[in-house]
Image 1 (cartoon, rainbow over the protein chains, first blue to last red):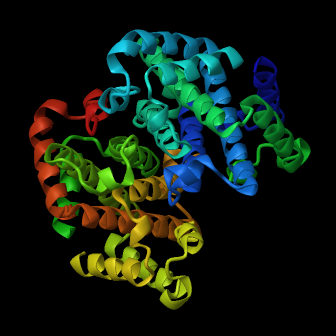
Image 2: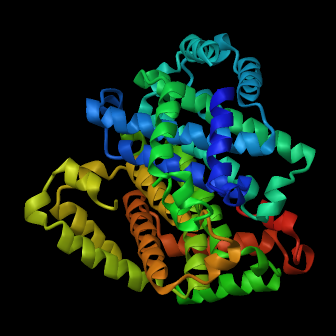
Length: 114
Length: 114
Length: 114
Length: 114
């Protein structure tokens, strides 16, 4: 991921696009990519979303890539270590939702991430 | 990232939450987290978004973590290697937007990711 | 809707909040509200989303209100007549998707709105 | 708006698309449209977003229409009167944010809608 972070920084710098890449603007670009992912699933059933045909799966794969790319860019502009943050947040979640207490509980699952 | 992927899978399995984690549902959870990021920036200027006070930066950092976590989960459910996909998409972008031709070009930057 | 448009304009003006209400910022506020709607449904089945308990339905009702409010605000800032635009777009959709040709066709439904 | 609501219901029924139009799915379609709006603004400055050239303004106008259309559809499926709800929420906002106390206050503006 560190190599990718550097490569994306170089990509923006060489194109003089860093002027557009404020965290504010990048958050908009990121949510626009997230919406393209949502669009793939909006008229599918949950089951269908789990069994995508090959061409659709490949399109979805590239949407996931776009989200990852913008996520790395924002984190970079803000000086955030993405994996370290995700790791820390996972620890918080593990303590907040002890397995034995929330097992199969849709309501607690619903809270999660709020 | 691979260790984190496994840990998140275990997290969901131990809580019996995998039943909720269809790609469709996870795409909704992901965009909801992306929106929490957007909310932090919506009334800030671009400059302010680049110079967050410490407490706000920490809140934003955990939002980025939430997005990363759901992104890993979806990729996992679909059997997608996230970093490999991001790498491949970056190569596509590098070829599609040659630095010498799109330098500082807001219109080409705007196209990018469409 | 015209009375509501005026009242929302007065609301922003009396609070000196129009300075924050650029179309760019309002589009961010709008998508953040749309995401709060999505959050209500993310772990529900499609059936459950159609049969909300009263308290949840009321919460969802107020999210729909928030989206409508921001939509009116953006349209106002851009000088767009919202209902006229929606009417025109509906006519475009009726011509683009003739009932006899797309009946029950998930793929054509999926295209719709793209 | 009532005439439009009926027309959109007929549109969906004649195409046998109501099967796809659960509130859950419609919330996904709505946020995807909201993201298309965001995309128009993501690399623009706030000032530019207020002074769109005619062709871009027309494109944005039709995005606003798409959002309005899906908003009417969801409200209809849930039995919500959209304008009544928006009116009620506006009254709540007026009481929660008294003009004399929050005037020009970015922080209170930021809270608003949370």
